[in-house]
Structures are given as structure tokens and as C-alpha cells.
Image 1 (cartoon, rainbow, N blue to C red):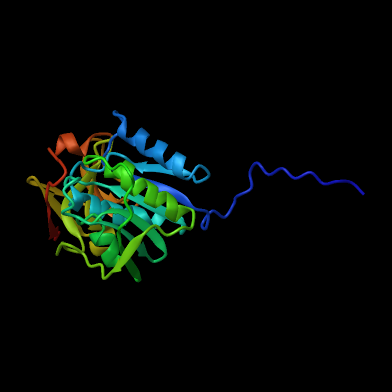
Image 2 (image 1 turned 135 degrees about the vertical axis):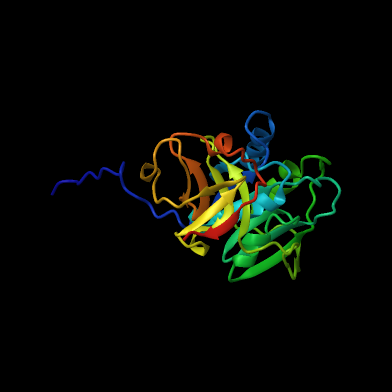
Length: 262
């Protein structure tokens, strides 16, 4: 009888139920803040993976962040704990610190509208106001001092001190937003509109330009602007081999109207 040696290098593991902490912030990567956040998480939950999903969420813009967060959540495992910080009111306590269990996934951060869309689209929601406080709490860095330890506790199966609440969205924002919510490094502009809500025959009119739909970049000539369904299910505006941001003078908050062609 011989001992069988298995090569496990290329085996695919089911990671749906393995805990991880996912970062969604406007801290950026050019300063110390994202690193300090990761250091705190490492000290509180050394065995839990930390994924810096997006550190360039539109700064101080909970509305744009809310639509982006709702689109990105679908791709993450069930056991992910989302640590979300876009907090222009940090230190004022105008917006309560909350943790929400939405369809089995935890979301931790300020209740300033950031969770409005993802919470509205959830089938089940349990809300809690975080009552735990650290011994030292900076007035300008609740992400590190308050939200990171709470997220670490949840990722390890523990429930920090919190009071149950009847959580409701803070704002009456539309289900789909006719605005640019994020511009990537290529100059492509994500919008807050889900592609399933838009007929492929529709044109987008933005800054005076009418854009037709294309399924792929190669369907249009280089330099031509168009709209398509991106990998996160959102309507995205792009220019083949170019920058929609530059060509169409776009920025976060640029609005568009939908027109049916023909």
C-alpha cells in the first residue's frame, strides 16, 4: 500500500463562511489613515483577513457612497464584516454609530445615509446602536478607535455592547440615482443606476452629449463615448481607449437624463 500525495496548490476552497473584514472608506492610500485602520484590526483580530476593498470612495459624500456600497456588497462572502467609514460629521455624534445585520452580513459605521440603499434592498435587517466606547476615542478618527474594534469583535463571533433599534433609512433617496457616483483610474464613470432598470435602446444625455448602449468597448470606435453594464451591475459611462471623465467633463455628482432613442 502506497501513501497518496495530494497536490493542494490549486484546490478551490469554499470561503463563503470564513470570516473576513472588508474596508470601504474615503481615507485614501497616500496618508497614514488606512494603515492605522489595518493595524488596529490586526491587533484586535490577528487571525482574521482584512481586505481593503475601496479606500477612494468619494470623499465626504455618504450619498454617492451609499449607491456604490449597495452595488459592491453582492460579490463578497456571506461571513464578511463590512467596516464602512465616510463620515464628514465625525466627532459631533450627530450620526449614531451603528452595526446592521443585513441578510446575514454585518455592516459597521456611521448612520449618516451610508447604509440607506444597502439597507433598503435587504430582505432582513437587524439594527443596533453601538454603545461600547474605547478608553481613548479621538474626535477625528472613529474609524480606527470605535468602528474597527467593533468590526473585529463581530468577525470573531462576539457581539459588542449595543442596543437594538428599529433602523430605518435616513433619507428619501431614489432606488436608482441618475448621477455619477465614482470615477475609476481609467476615467470610467459609474452611476447610481442599476443596468437592469434601463432598456438597452435608451440613450443617456449628460453634459449635452447623448450616449448609446454598447455591450463591450470594442463595439464602438476608439474615442467614442457610450454606456454599458459594468461588472457590478451598474450603468457605467466610458470612452473606448479614452477617458470619459476628460472627454465629457464628468465628476462625481454629474447628472444625466434617460431618453428613449427612435
